[in-house]
Length: 494
Image 1 (cartoon, rainbow, N blue to C red):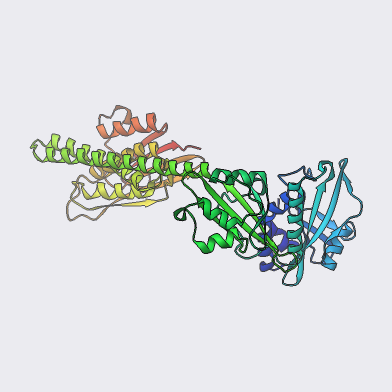
Image 2: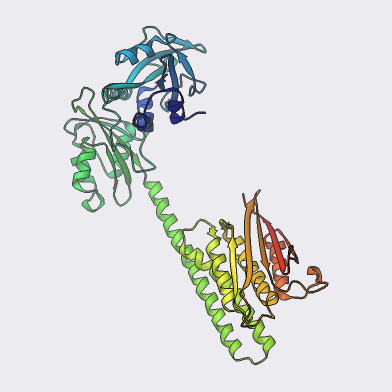
């Protein structure tokens, strides 16, 4: 389905500012559709004057739809829909005398010119399914009157307005709670849902006839209210803004859209939504996030304590083999501690950005190596975000493979030799992670067989790769020269 920008660029003479205006309108036209109980379709004029292109569509949540199919991308030639032609040419609202019949459904069609800076740049058709029409209640009459005010503002270039979009992802809709206030900010009508929202704040009477700003001040303590300027502007209906109001147990988002159908301020549409449950869940998530990060922090501290104890024990042992074994244990514990340290510093998403861990492991392994010549590791490619369980096992695997490459590849190096090179190549393709550790050292011993190897580090790697990571490990001579190459291939979670 083509986007508004693509259709405007391909078929119209509208400039970027015109398209931005239409995007701002479409960001809020769900409100107009719900208040009108009607489908809205945005029509753009063809650059050659041959007709109109449907560039957007919005169905109401308050009534039955008039369109079963999507209209976006549809072209209507000039003359087929006279109401479109007339609204665009005359710059005024046009209503058909008799309803259209679509799939045995009578539909009333009205067209609204979209004006920007004294130019009509598009037309909105408002399509009402008449099968859903009944004797209107006070709620429906107020909805329709407010919709009429908004459509006049669209035709006059007064709607949308800069700054009217909500900063909240959970901005209120018409069905959440609807209030109509007059030019003085006094409630003229409040929907049952809006009244219920204010009942939760502690209201015992009615909303109608009360100053919404003054009434809210009486229900919400000063410490829980926004600043007075914002409160007066939003609840008084004088600004295209929203704000959040919270008491000890209730949190509300309140949004105001001033109404100026003839260029004169006559009041405002105020929408309210009770977001108490959402805010409670947010607080629970924040608490959970902090708790999990604290756990990771403590695990990291405990592992570092274990590593320090092993290091102290290593210094007291004179037997080289025992000392080497303890040093290897220190490195293994340190690699796991790195993962928990990373998890303790980031938001809890059960994902770990592994590149930083890999780079720190490379530095850690090469800095503590016992070979004579310096060794440098270069990483190509990115691990990306990995599940925390996978990150822990992979950190251990990477530590062992790098350590093997350093110690066995460059064991014979002397202090005067050139820098040893290790390449760490990473690729994510086809739902799998492929990691290659390649050195330019002396290579594998003659007759080496991974299955019969008694090396503890390689045994750990093989077990982790095959059992924990559900992948495969291959160890072979480097192609194209001396050295060894270890390759692991593991599946990634969807």
